[in-house]
Image 1 (tube, one colour):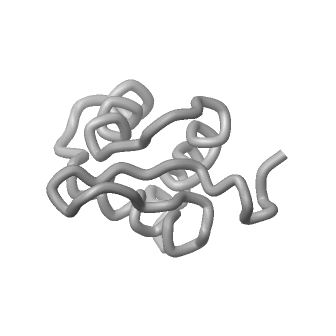
Image 2: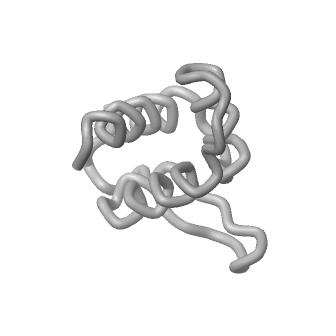
Image 3: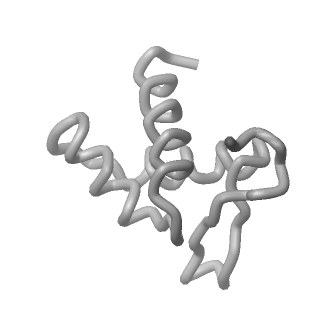
Length: 79
């Protein structure tokens, strides 16, 4: 895992725990743009959401073309 990816995932973990609600690729893109500056963040945002879902922090919901993620309150890593 690269240092850049580690920074992004750490930020997304923190944000998902602090700011409740649905996490979409668009929401993560805005987070990354605010923190890291302009860029093409779409693919990285999508991949990071998938990575945190695979780790059990987020739960994937919705249809394929309307996916969103929510904090997994039952994984024991929050709080």
